[in-house]
Image 1 (cartoon, helix red, strand yellow):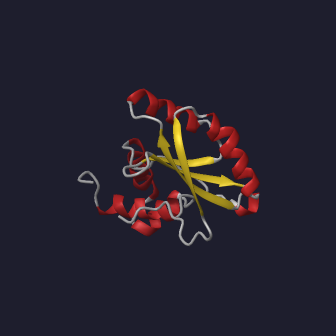
Image 2 (tube, rainbow, N blue to C red):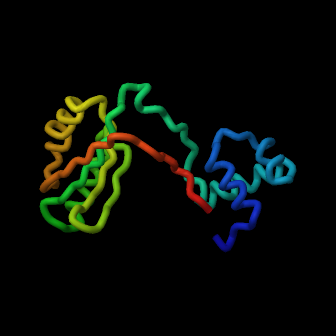
Amino acid sequence: MNELDEIDIKLLKLLGEDSNVTTKELAGRVNLSPSPVFERVKRLEAGGYIKKYIALIDAEKLDYGLIVFCNIRLKQHDKSIGHEFVTDIMRLNEVVECYNISGDYDFLLKVYARNMKHYQDFVFNKLGSVKSIGSTHSTFVMCENKNSYNINI
């Protein structure tokens, strides 16, 4: 953060709110001409402050309305089993987020499914084939009240 000035922070905030905004629009909002804004954004990208640009898709409109948080406990703890688990999970399209966590469980997965039958099939046929899993615990989302990837800086 020491490398960033007030304009860089403002650009990150604006892009976090709407990554589809044009360089010209950004320039107007930070009171600079488009060329320096373009260069700043490229520097923020190259510096890793901006990882990528995405579109937030409405899962319900695509018939993926069931959101499940699945806690995973590994059979045992060692480096190779952890890496094996992550490699296996990366191949599962239903898993949209995977976190290595502390506490009673080792990993937390965010899973999108069409319905309960789809999730059951996912657990039995996909998660069930991941040999490093010792146990799972699923929590079903009743209502998504807030979903924001933007960081308050």
